[in-house]
Length: 408
Ligand SMILES: [Zn+2]
Ligand SMILES: [Zn+2]
Image (cartoon, rainbow, N blue to C red; front, top):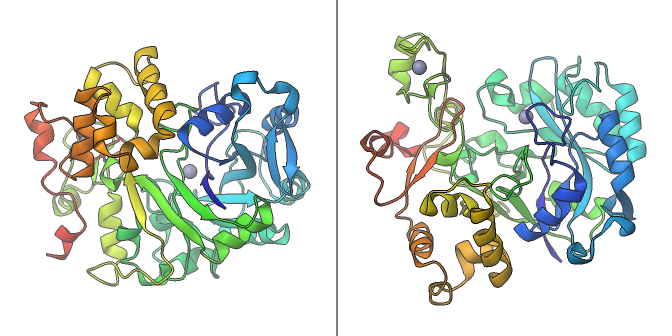
């Protein structure tokens, strides 16, 4: 069976996370988004474990569902959960762990050093290899989160994945600012499966499931999910156009001015505004590249670019993305056409046309790849530009936006 899985989110006790990040809200929202399986996030945190304990129960081996008595009539169909946590190691590198059971979570928690209850995403006072060993002893899956971002990733710290883990991790999470077209420039990643996850801090549809993995499994159990990931039977990765990611381009973290790397280095990574310039994921991947064109290994699944539909609705009608107005249109379209991916990619335009014509013309532009995007960088997300957008500054940024530019 084919399932859509978003394996990296955070619960309400993680820093800067919405109070609505609780299973009772996440599960029905995820289902609307078209997800079948979501990571619980934060499963080493005591307060979060308590919430999970109250709201979900194991229904298949290593797979959890909202407890029956908590389900409302209109939300009977909800997504399922798998236990996950993101941890930060002693070098401030982030790793994602996918766990088979609460027992495993208690064992892992026991073995890790650090104040694991201080945040949903704990800081562990240990190196990556030691943490990975503990995870593997408990049959968990383990690999780097958002591997190329400039603050807390594997490649901000190391030039090789083996300098960090010394052996092959189970997967690499691409992060919002990269896709497999970019990451497959790097030779050492050829035999490593890629995951695309949302890292959502809020349950609303422009965050939850904004990236996900299409997995082919015989049955929905932890064992099958594990098997599917380590044997790289991932059917497809769905995710942002990397330009929309927060760290795609080299840019100032204070005023978000985009810099070309030579200029940034000449200024010693200092912006004229006094802010710090952070190297973009596109340039970091260029530095790590072995080839000037992506070399996709035979079992690398397609990477399908998507956009958050709610964000497009918000842009077209000039209303906040979490407003009732935007959410109502989003829900109507998603329910009518099955799910968001169907609206964005698969439903014939003729069938969509009678609904919100202004909106559908933007979806058409997206499908024809004529939609303009202003690249993200320095911690600010990229932006979709509408045809009538008269912001000249932002248009200038759209000219230099692919990795190819570095190879000349
Ligand atoms: Zn992280
Ligand atoms: Zn600046």
